[in-house]
Amino acid sequence: MEVLNLLQHRRSSKKFSDIAPTKEQLEIILKSALRAPDHGRLKPYHFVVIEKESMALFEKHLKSAAIEFKLGNEILAKAEKISQRAPMIIGVVAKITKDIEKVPAWEQMLTAGCATYAMQLAANAQGFETCWISNKWIDGSDLRKAFNCQESDKIIGLVMIGSPADSESITLASHTDDTTPFVSYLK
Image (cartoon, rainbow, N blue to C red; front, side):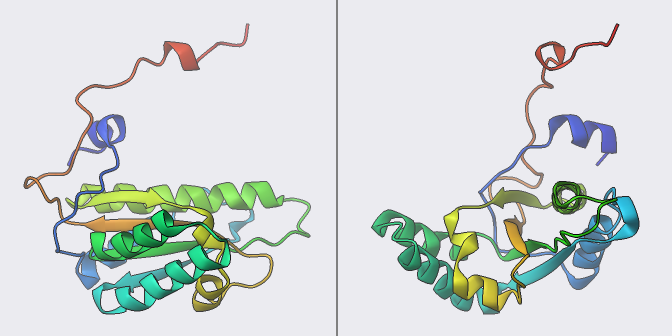
């Protein structure tokens, strides 16, 4: 897929078929994440790949968080659906070092976010649908432990990845957006 077209038309989709990226495709996705803008070259992130055979364990961790935070039966049911929706999920952990004056914590968090978006773009460019999700459950004690989080770490999202369910190509926006309301010029 042509890069500029993808950048202007990409959108998230939660409709996946059961084909996950191959090891080679996953390597491209992860290498793309490592090229995110990164002041200080800290690489303040860690990725946890959840493949089909680990989805039951992942579901258990999401349900545990729903119970831990008293999120209710609706979210408990949603935890089950999420673990069955995509054939691969990548958890993204921002590895924040708070005592670096040159690179404040907020900037490290942005780097982890850029890495997450780069993963989505690399997956989309290879023909996979993606959706970046979060919820209170990403702060669940069991999930944090499973992801080997330290106290200062923050799970910033779960990237769902899989082949398109409804067609042979990924979901794209039908039009580009008007930039006018979002742009001004310093004069």
